[in-house]
Image 1 (cartoon, protein in one colour):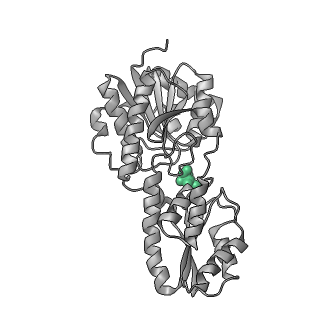
Image 2 (cartoon, rainbow, N blue to C red; image 1 turned 120 degrees about the vertical axis):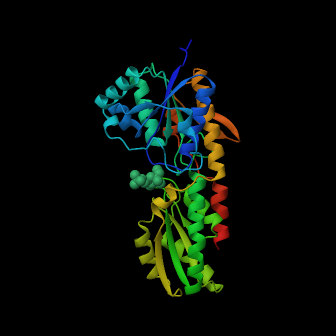
Image 3 (cartoon, rainbow, N blue to C red; image 1 turned 135 degrees about the vertical axis):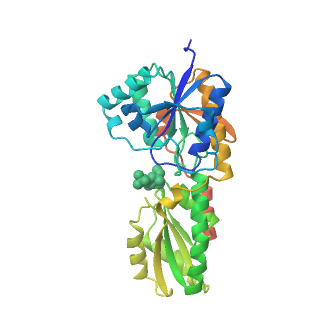
Length: 329
Ligand code: F6P
């Protein structure tokens, strides 16, 4: 029998993602609904190590559903990678009588949670996928992905206007060190002339061929979406190499959207997703679940052990990728 949960703590960790606040709100509200005491740990594992934790009231969850960033702040903690750091973190939880944890973050966050659970299995932990990258196995969508794609598409729409006016080729870099989800969805929604992602082997020759197919039918401007972690190199190198092979465009430009993708008010989709996952994480903790990420698959709640969420690779939808290449022509 798992012990009764009375005091839970929530934290956000790793890169922030729009919708994290909506998840915190859902956790706070459902905790209150179940007469649980709820605590917020500031700056992720850093705050856990430093004892930076405080009781949350329902009012803390008011007026935050529409806000980007995270009211609990976040950090990428190096100290938590050490046994000494994790011991200090455990002491903070014990000092505050915390008997359940909810971690909102991505791969690094769950790697830390999994390690922590091996050493201190007496505190159950559940994870909520919060990262713009959408790269976690065990969930169709992560919190923040939809908003990030919408931000990138708005930028591409604007670039399209000026690219068209000047007959220019634009390379637009979007985030995703290891994952091409943002790039692929931005390319499809933004009507891009090409997409380069980490999951696919692309060559300069293929890209030249693709762009030339467009210019042959008098397409005088184009936009290629480049994921940060694509296999061909930096967006600047790619632009330079293409400029040596294709001369029809008046000019070639590079735009890096960067951290704009991480901020802003979450989309309605991300707010709903975050609410469902936050609400469900509280229920799951109370039902005695631990060591799992709460995700969504085919519109239903789906639990994935941390080890799978971290180590298994979420496969790109090959049909979507093929479609995007055909649409790009
Ligand atoms: O993991 C989310 C993400 O935004 C990646 O897409 C990006 O590569 C990385 O974080 C950037 O991290 P930081 O803000 O720490 O530079």
